[in-house]
Image (cartoon, rainbow, N blue to C red; front, side, top):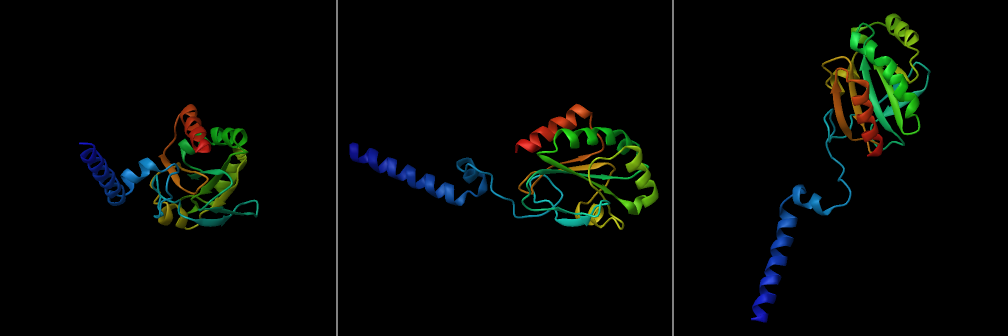
Length: 184
């Protein structure tokens, strides 16, 4: 009787090992402590953020993609966009409040705007975070598949897109998402 119990226990262990090895990431992830890094790149939650480097209006180069010191909120906007205008003061407040754990990068999609109006927007709202021009909408359209203004892409320190927010959110909801982002 004892021998049969050991055999049954051994078979169950072997079945468990076989399931673990062949069931794919679903079961394996239950046993892993860290989330595995995604291998695909794209503008969707759970994928690596499409990488790009762009020069800000301050003359510095800013890089998105891959491991970073801080989480990133990537904000695609246009000066004529009413929701973008409503959101600008909130983004300034978040940039100041979370400056030690979050980089906010504003990307003016200049293909649908113009530099003069964008600069007026930046001055009017005293934008406190780096802004860059996406002159041909290569970043917005090609890499991030943008469809609406504003679009906010929340990227964690590992370079993984956590969420894509189309349009504006109430300030408390956006801050809640930022708090979650900087903790991940």
